[in-house]
Image 1 (cartoon, rainbow, N blue to C red):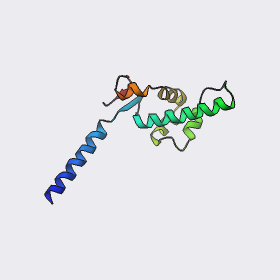
Image 2: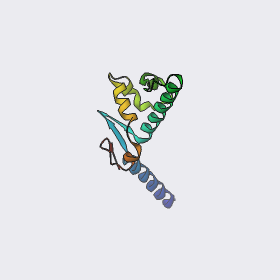
Image 3: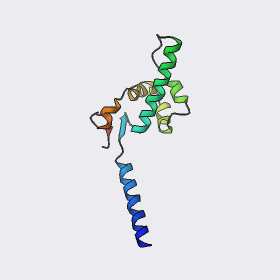
Image 4: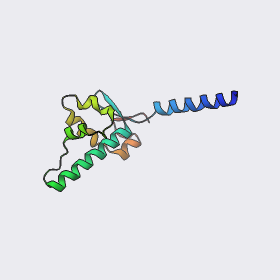
Length: 111
């Protein structure tokens, strides 16, 4: 019984440490998980592809529609409600993921 309890505590400690060291992306006063930023980039890429099919001159994504998308992670909602959200979301959508994953990008922390 003590062995099981010890193993459970070690697994719990490992989970807490790994969560604390997860890569975060900073935009202004907000911090977002790397996985959430990847999801945002997927959503903006989908929107850009739809716009290009309708009219090739429309290459920008409507960030209002991204904020209204139910697939957007909830941690972006405070940013979506803030004035100037489209600029912040466009910067997050442009974060280079390969560089961020190795923490060579200034906005990425927690490696």
